[in-house]
Length: 285
Ligand SMILES: NC(=O)c1ccc[n+]([C@@H]2O[C@H](COP(=O)([O-])OP(=O)(O)OC[C@H]3O[C@@H](n4cnc5c(N)ncnc54)[C@H](O)[C@@H]3O)[C@@H](O)[C@H]2O)c1
Image (cartoon, rainbow, N blue to C red; front, side, top):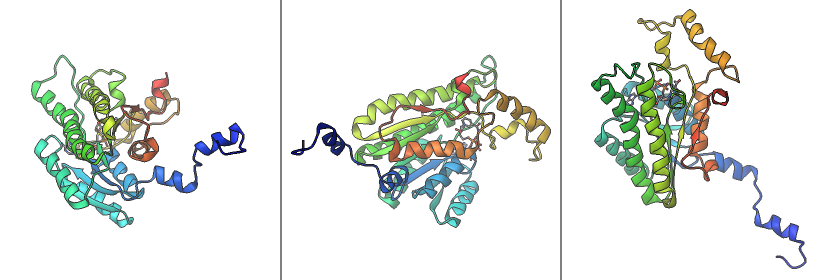
């Protein structure tokens, strides 16, 4: 204790003051390098945009090269740093090569966002083994490979944040969404298991479980074969979801991207093995 200081004054000196600079630094990604898979569309695209706008150099990975390029070009137009990387996340060697190339080019990897995913509508009773293999390969193995490749680099660096995309579907069973929900449950368990494995080596692993967000994936319920939106059908799909949610709305890709930013940034440096649930409050029912 400082000579002459009261115990209360001494206590204050132990807690550093938060300032505009310290808060901006905690929530920002200046000088950080990030990979975002599924960056060509929807939640992945919004996440790539938000991370880049927060200062990160972002590698936009997607199986569809043209959409990854569109995202990277849009970010560059806004003054951010982005690179397009065509990759199939279900291909372990391709994911390893992606991470290797990023580290060779940028010298480090601070943030890995495993967002690429696919939907499959099937009952559990009728689930075909080829469909199971496909959805497990993309939604689970794709996330696992990203965690492994990035995790090795981050453990060596003794720092890094991995963000995995799960889904509210894993928390609330719904008919015909079972196989998808099972892959997302596996992502949640992977996140928790890996977090306890790598925490002491400076690496954090968290997941996000969004509620319904209109994107190309969910547009399947109201987009016609020719690509046009059936507005009446869209309203039929969205209206009950809005009514059910305490916040009376469905999500936007940016709602999820801001959760990704929080988990990627140092603002969440005491958080690992956790699941954030941006869902309009649905789970509170
Ligand atoms: N939209 C929702 O309501 C919602 C809700 C919960 C969770 N999610 C999850 O969020 C993630 C993004 O979904 P979205 O709604 O933005 O979908 P989206 O279809 O708009 O985007 C998915 C992207 O992943 C890419 N992709 C698919 N397979 C790939 C592969 N093998 N390798 C690399 N890229 C691949 C696609 O090309 C696409 O660009 C998914 O993991 C999804 O399961 C979405």
